[in-house]
Image: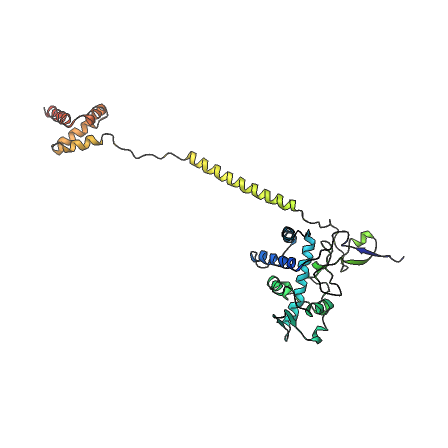
Length: 315
């Protein structure tokens, strides 16, 4: 039994077609350029980055675009730059900055695929932005493609043709506009077989469909990060307070309460032996009350007691 041909409009059941204005395209490319400046060498944009760009576009222009639509538009310009970079790598070709067009011979242009020929026959929109964003990446020629087989599946383009996450962009046969139309495919087989194959005919693994990452997930992650930071700060503060509370008290430097008494004894005219005798007597523990009394006594009283003590001692 021959298999019936089913015509399925893949994109119509998922999302609407979005017409991009020039200022919206420039804002998107500038956003990716600014984001890429803070990243490491070899960084690649992924789904979560396209989601952040979609949020920025919706806040700026109220476009209502989804992460898949932004992803397709980004890859549309990435593919355009592949064609431009491949043409500029060939000797004899150059770029006219005054007219924003690639100077290429008609004979060479005739060997290109339809999309590349239409692109290089007109002024290149956002040439400087694409050059800054895609220079040094696979779009700049590290994985260069032949123009005649530019739509063949390769390691770099296989991801572009996978229908798991988005509908591949289709450039209309007419004008090279910024509008990405809906993609209509003729697929053989029933509904189950259609969902198991990519456009390139490669069977893909059965998995849950990739959905647009909700903004609630990003907000939840951000909230958890803030709570974790607050918990760390509270822990550090509690540790600091505990260390301060358990720190040993500072011991003040001990001072002799009878220092003035010894200084006053030095002023009395005595021999060294007599001064030592008086000091040894007053330094004993039993004479602590006497030391306190003499500290507060007048100089005449102190002199009288010293001479009386020495007389008794010598007698």
